[in-house]
Picture 1 (cartoon, rainbow, N blue to C red):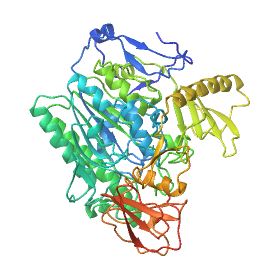
Picture 2: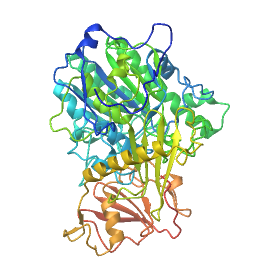
Picture 3: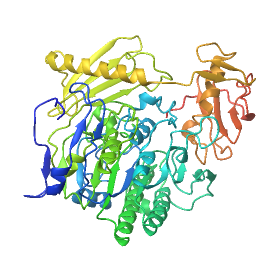
Picture 4: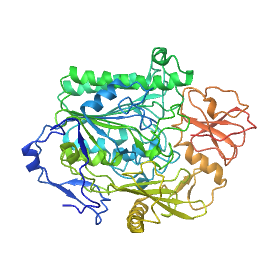
Length: 578
């Protein structure tokens, strides 16, 4: 048995007497687990032992992820403005994860960790500006092929280009079929790509579209007798908000922004209802594991003042409001209605599904999540390992553990390590059992817990730093390759060049006004918009070998393989806010 950190407490709350996650005698006897850990750290995730005998049919698996949805932005959590009847039904029939956490307070790193079970910093996906999923990582889509699953990705990707030197497509990461967008999408979107080929403009709401595509994939799998993994990642309710008139009408007494915002959530929920109904029509709903989650907390601009339920912080923060999100699991063949306060993370998805399918990945890289299969069975009383966090929105490399904001969280306590820009390190400790809003810092009064968790956190950070790898080269226009530590002819321009191949995913049908320079004409740039970089006061975007530039300052280095197109003169610049 793994060494446990903390006292044993019952955390599963059943909705009625004698009702809870279903188990079978054979399963209780046949399922044995092995945890590889450093002491009680649990920093290497759950690995099934070789003598597991499955006592249930392997399920189909569907992973659903919303975009910028606050922890309390569902009907089942009591929102008076969000209309979510289908999520409410899932919550009433499945397992409600009251303390579900994203690995990162922003979307791209969370997605990378969800597919790998590994903290995003381990494989270089540091933040939104620096996140390309390393194709050398083993993803969930690749791992489940050992059990002969077919795999599909539908919706937001945001972990690499679909072409070019920084490409990292769903297809290159184990997905057999994919209809995906590099970033977010709303109505009549134009930037979907189907298995590497541009998709024509869609008609209608993006949430409906990606679920319809997923249903086609699911029907094919069922007709062929295949088990499937379907990953459906929404772009709602990320701004800009744009809903169908029929969805806005449900919220007709609200402002236009609110109608669009809540209309997006309503459309997403409707599509989940469409999906669940199709599973019933196909006769596979009982043995399909449906896992719904958010990707990070709500933005500051979220029109719902109760989006985070009063938790501190928002998107971009490692305070609760930035990382605690909705989480639900529905698997009727295995589980009845239940609620749990045991902490669960997006890091746990990969090891849990591998455990369910009795898959052992050869030469598995170090994991940071644990299997929560015992929780689904109703036998887990506390988490077996801590949940780690480490994020810095501004770095493009990782050279030291004293950078950014890191957190070590166990069942009871949450330790913050906050490094200021001058290198000053501050620690704060909170009791999450009775202070979820993180008001009372216990670091000076409970030094024993603080010091112990500090040691565990920094030991873990060192393992991440040891794992971290980065691209050591920069390519300039002459085709010459230089070391990243050397000086490029124009370091700022070279930095932009390097990022132009990774940030193309900030693409939309139109040039959003909130990214525009104050005196620029809002316009579309062949379906892509440019992004501002403070190093050269340049707006830059890429598409099909063309670098689009506002202004003329990016004219001394022409990227290899790209042509330059100046689309406007700008003298007044504002920084991007995303």
